Length: 174
Length: 174
DNA sequence: TATTGTTATACTCTATAACTATA
DNA sequence: TATAGTTATAGAGTATAACAATA
Image (cartoon, rainbow over all chains, first blue to last red; front, side, top):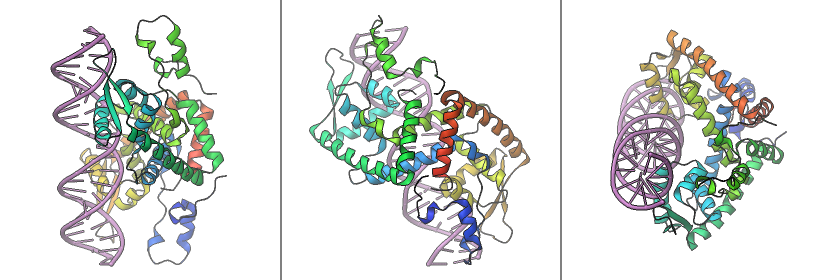
């Protein structure tokens, strides 16, 4: 069983229904709205979960202004210095066209570089700048903090179980 | 263990590394690109999974032109005839402003209606038209087909396990 | 001919702010 | 004052098509 989040917004539908009978002016007179067959759709929960997680990630890393997609780009360049834009795009499932814009922004912030690729004049070799390396290091610390929020919400066992499941099923695929 | 997808794009990284040693001109000379610490982030897999699932959903329902968000709106209205736009927005976590546009489109397609809410002149009561009910019925059939694709990819046991986990953790919350 | 990086366009979705008419 | 619906705008992300330079 996961730890229960005690914030108001975490109330279950049945809990809200029960709260209705307690004397309250008008706000909680609303009957709970059921989502019917959506409860059978993995995609529905996956989407809600993903939005929640990304919001927490964005909030937690807001002090350095790094968003999830940017984080993933920095991590993969840091892990594979000198890789090309197409390899990066393929790896992360980002459109080549979109990546151009993202790298423009990261480059303007002094975090990444495009260098001429040795022996392949049509492609670029991507690197983190010194600044980019420092930023990535800081980002990883904050991202770990974000992951701790997840553990808090899901319970450590649930988080691990989910991660293992997802990894098994989605690792290295599109 | 889940069934293995045998399509080329489903190759695991290690499989691709092995394929490298086989004689092939240049394409598979690329070393696999590692994603480093992303492998520890639930949000990373959640996002990849969600994108895959939504794409399959969109493809599977393309013949009726219903997207995931539209589907969820139709389901919830069908389940709660006469509910207001704000209740709908709150339930699905859609911005009130965004919902206005979505309902405009669904209404223009003759699938939903806004009726004056009895006793609350500032809010609308939402209903499916006859046409909308038929569309929803068809959509549910196709959505079940989509869910079968998921079972195929994840394995029935994994899909159930994921669904139960997600439901326990995210049901009725934001 | 196919690939790499690029530009451009369109559409979906999210996030805000502001306005009106109600309550 | 707060809520319901609406309008408008800005930005992220996705999906395409097309082009020049290169392989």
